[in-house]
Length: 309
Ligand SMILES: O=C(CO)COP(=O)(O)O
Ligand SMILES: O=C[C@H](O)COP(=O)(O)O
Ligand SMILES: [Zn+2]
Ligand SMILES: [Zn+2]
Image (cartoon, rainbow, N blue to C red):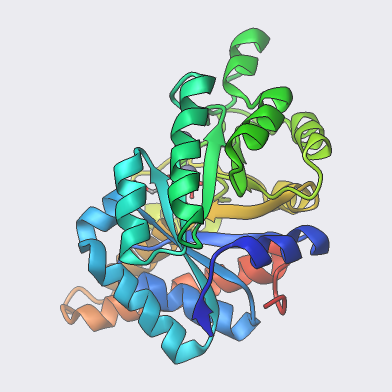
């Protein structure tokens, strides 16, 4: 029972051909819903905090809530900074006791991304903290985007090898066609699996990370829209593609949008069906249950990490 870094978790995931879910957390109910699912499934778990979440909840609250979850469940949990944009925020989270951080230098030229990542790796490794970096830019697949433009944003396999060698980073987020948010594809969903296979073959036994990996379940989109939301055309990564990625070296699959959709659909339903209700526990409670159900389904049927604790 502990706050752990990602080293052993990823080693086992890689060998087992499954992925660990990395879920974004912003408040107590979200944490409890996710943790309760992982506990029932006896699954490894990564809880990640974005800069926005850290600002919303204050740096210390989310860490304390995650510690409470560990104390109550006995689970091994990685507490990870999502998309750290500079050395300072990575250092602050490491100093606060996070067990893992992401330094996202993907917007910089290769050499700058390498220098920045290396600096974070040195600081983190001295303190037993693991580091994720990103190479290539996440973007949606647009039907009319030319191949050269597309290639420019996807991760280059040879650069990935050079990047890992020069930085010593523990895991690498790659761009193969996923994107953040609820609108990932205009036409049919498409990921560059050939590129993923090439990167994975060039980096044997190395954990890759897939961002923008929510599936945007249509049941949540329909529920949201039925109860007054306006999110037409939302579309995510099909579950089958995530299973395939987990078999190709992807050890960490990032999910935020699906949590937001599950919670929002549930709250909208409660409000519509019970307009006289104003006790937060009466709508946050069912929202927490909806998150638990969604996460449990992912762990069991998509990530493949049920029972892999
Ligand atoms: O990658 C993510 C967080 O880093 C979340 O991706 P989604 O928007 O697909 O949930
Ligand atoms: O990658 C982005 C995550 O979905 C976090 O989003 P956020 O920055 O709004 O907290
Ligand atoms: Zn990024
Ligand atoms: Zn991300």
